[in-house]
Image (cartoon, rainbow, N blue to C red; front, side, top):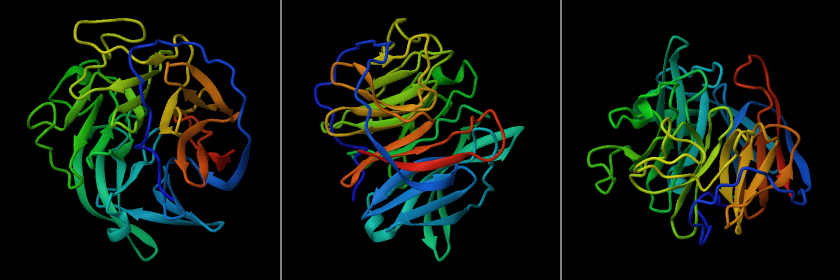
Length: 339
């Protein structure tokens, strides 16, 4: 079983700005696993699902059994508000090395920072093997947090704006960006800004990335009081925040392919199902579909907050996080399979 985060959306061009979510027959779903607590990312390999939980665990689900294992890091995981153990990516050589990449929130509530680390399973725990990138500014809510390997074999990382209006447009800051690294954490020679990990800038809080079959990158990000966006991301592109949003334009700024207008999707994970993008919507309580012409529809009305969506050879899976990051306490969540 292999993840389809880096496969196919042909011909998705232009900037069709769609604010309404159109009706679409809802998919059927079955609960595959109950008892999750604020899961954040789901990946798959060889029949096993891998799920991060914000408190600091990376679990394995196979043959009906779920094994929850702690992640041991050199800097403690700060599980507070929207921070914790977030994004997960399986290295391209995962079958041989068993190594994964994780996005980790650390520090203190008064001094937060994010890191990208590599880890491997050793017995009953996942153990950090090295830090790939450190010093990403942190925030109680706006941390980005998605990591994924693209079809070019490079590692892509999304970061949040941390409620600082200067950082998304500041090339010296890692905040409010999509970053691109080699699998070992180095800066690729062909990055758009020489010597910099920045791939694109002007993002507010991107939490979803996926590629089409031609290698085109797309990103989903939370807007300010609505204006959530789905962007077609180009190397070196500036996506406007905080100077522009929604239908607004600016010199050298890229407009989104689609946005939510004054309503809110609260988008997180992003995947491709063979015909369209699938977008996990927290506030929408649904998995949204984005067609080639930019039309946004409800692919599955979950009735609960959907954090991530994954397409595999065995079907489409999604995880929920039903507690708002603005609140404390446990979150009663589940893994579901969409028909």
